[in-house]
Amino acid sequence: MKPASHFRFQRYTFPGTLFLLSLLLAFASQTPAADAPKYNVLLIMADDLRPAMGCYGDKQAKTPNLDRLAARGIRFDRAYVQYPVCNPSRTSMLTGTRPEANGVTGNGTFFREKLPDTVTLPQWFRQNGATAVSYGKIFHAGLVEGEAENRFFDSGKSWDEARMFRPTRAGSTGPRRNLTGGKLRWCEVAALDGSDDDQSDGQTAKHTIAAMERLAGSRWFIGAGFHRPHDPFVVNRQYVAKFPAGSLTLNRDPASASELLNHSLGGGAFGEAFQKFEDRDRMDFLTHYYAGVTQTDAQVGRLMDAMDRLKLWEKTVVIFVGDHGYHLGERGWWNKNTLFDRSCRAPFLLVAPGVKPAVCDSLVEFLDIYPTVAELCGLTVPETVKGKSLRPLLAAPKKPFHDSVLTHITRGPKVTGFGLRTHRWRYIEWSDGGLELYDHSNDPEEWHNVAGGDANAKVLAELKRKLADRR
Image 1 (cartoon, rainbow, N blue to C red):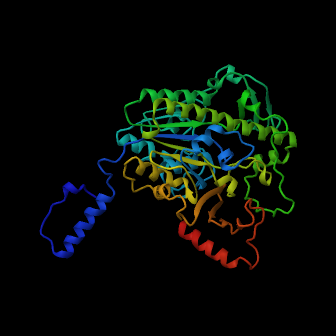
Image 2: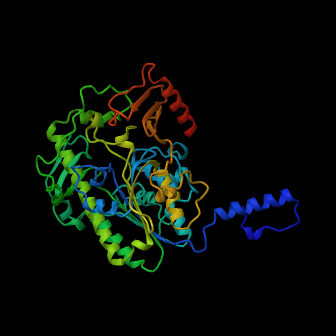
Image 3: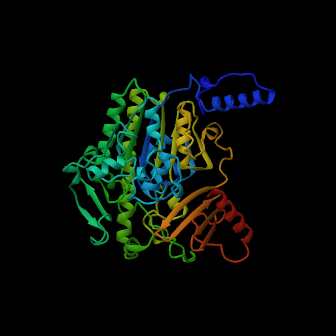
């Protein structure tokens, strides 16, 4: 639609006049007010972080800074990703498009190959006068420097500057152990020497703080992406020491848990490795995962202290998310990439000027983050963005919102799955006809598939219809 100033006013019949007025009103509703606040944005992302945080009720977690951040704003208790793997989840969130539509369903696909002209969330801020910089992992990229990594960063389009960091020599020194005997390189635990800034995540925090200082007085969008608790589980030894022997408890699946369809879990080399785990392996995995969470928490604390010192809270929207959930031994699985709540549900905190602290248990999707941030900062929402702004929930956190949320997954070239989560049910539908149904009113850990028989036939039919509508 052309700007309102380009319309020519002529004589119209009464219906024509109403039509013109409706067009003008529609345009005005999409145009931010001249006095709309032009806030900064600090987007903090943690890699492979399920809600293993004290503020989410995890009694084993040590996350004082994230708990402090949650106390400043809205904690979304039922936030769901659109694909429980790093690259597809981040692409969906930052482009406002669904994986099944944008074609990014794996870690090896750069989103510009599928969406060459899409305008990402930081890019939208750049186009509206902000400086956008990224430190650490925001868009999916490896830690190896080179052309491929720079391409995945989307520098020059999404960001004015984008960097990732390597640990120093001191930050690479310490005892290591591979939980698979060296068969899978990623499955390694380590307690490393050095300070926080000898680790890549500490350098991400340091550069983020420097950018806040450097960009003072201008409008900015800063992404701070922390790699922990993602594998390999190499963590500064001071954080591993916070979880001495006996301080953590391993998950034990109930003997009555129902069997799963073959593709419900990822399987492959991962599944083979997990099946060979002994309790020592499981405990090392669990300890270093939680230590990684605490290490990320410490870096978030550094950012919060900088926000205090620079007096940025009243002019900055802060978003903290994990890019998807994670299994820590549930169903014998130690990874993401399933359609269970453990994998699809992730932490999501929002702090913004004028937003009162609260807990929101309405269903929300990570797809909703793009339009929410844009609206909070006085920007229109691009028509390509498919999410729904959460602004109504910021004023009334108990208000009903989505009646269901949708997560997609693939299992090789032949099998795809969709998981639909309502307030009570999780319904999973596989392309080969397999069905799963879990009743969260009495089975919150989804141990018992109740899709068989006639007892839930009406529920299945309704959820099947709802899933078809969502797709």
